[in-house]
Image: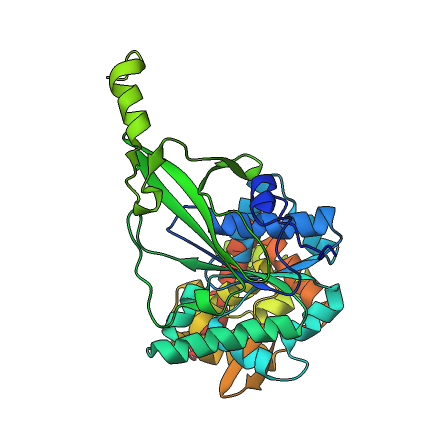
Length: 259
Length: 130
């Protein structure tokens, strides 16, 4: 029996996710500044509206809606028209207001979901919840509460989170929402031969198979484009991978100009 | 000299009467102007005075009373959620249309000059100055 999917519209990523996210799930996208978290999230919304007849809501805790709409336009996504057509709502608010709102019955968000028939939601970014609680356990509970409220509204969610580490290992703490999210995507910078590349990894997808290899991706004029896996190197997620023995041998002795 | 002043004052009054009334009675301070422009650009925003002040880059102690006045004037709506006071743009279509006209008119430099004149006059009146 095939399970319905919620495709992101990012070809390589949907293939990694075995077709897309599972409906009604909360999906965490984490990465350093500039890795394309918000772009991925906007692309998820754009694809939902234009290709899947699934209106969406973007909750932004940082970027002004007018700026977000302008950024989307740079990729050819007409969020202003979607808003005018009642297929999208970009809602600027704060974590404390959002939590208070979703706790009540028929809150502002729930009413909006009903009004536009929203099926997808983006929360950009969860990192702002850190100002609500210093205690990691409490912070995790707040995240859990938000995720459950979005599920109650039958929304498929993309939740972004910043990771301050540009390269190298990232630290995980007790507050880690990766445990409560249904899937966990990691966007990383990787340094190879003095050039910075971008790497994407699906660390988990609850209830579904998913690709476990690390793929290269780029932010193009059309949005995110997931490409082939990194070949000939290992230690990608360390941020500074090294060549495999075979590649190192080839570079040293077989490939002209590579010495 | 007096004729020149009269002509200047007359020129300042040469504004769409609805917008003139808005400037005299509702958007009569520069903070309120900032708030109205912000909500016009971000009409679905729902937030506290603290956060709204942060968004427009002003001091919350200055912004909060202005938000209350804009609420009384029907430009904003306010509700209490848990222990938070949340402000949103009014759902009234007539007021929303008026605000849209105001913000669009502000694209014109001449209108802005007139609007600034009226806001300064309102602020002076508030302080009991001529």
